[in-house]
Image (cartoon, rainbow, N blue to C red; front, side, top):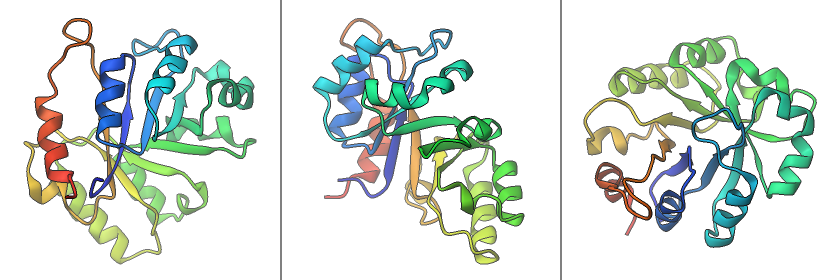
Length: 201
């Protein structure tokens, strides 16, 4: 078990899928847009799912794939979609769970204007230059608003430190997969350091 929830995104090799599943992450995101460099084809998704049990599976779709959203989720065994906040209109007519990506500025505006609570989505704040600024900002927003939903953050540029990894302001992290150095092999040193902090013995 981990002390915080984890979303693993950009998963397109079995080495990544097994690694993140071994840490019992909560969500795995596959890219189904053939033009995306992290594209995973349906056959590979099925293979990964047969090897990896436990996480909920979300898909990041191309814009024109949203017309077939419900069919894609059924065919590929998905639980929801992952998309930028500025494309939220693409799922307006669907009853579907979403991982919604946004900047700290967009999140701040949404909390102040009370437009995020109704989304019923998992919020991920990304492109973080300074995690300590984010923690300070979110603390201030939460103390002055009714916003109570979970907040995930993309791993920041800051050096890994237990004080921000375990900050009570952050409910979970978005982590990215990466290409294998060779088939079946890659280094996870940096992610290992974070997971060791998150590990709940």
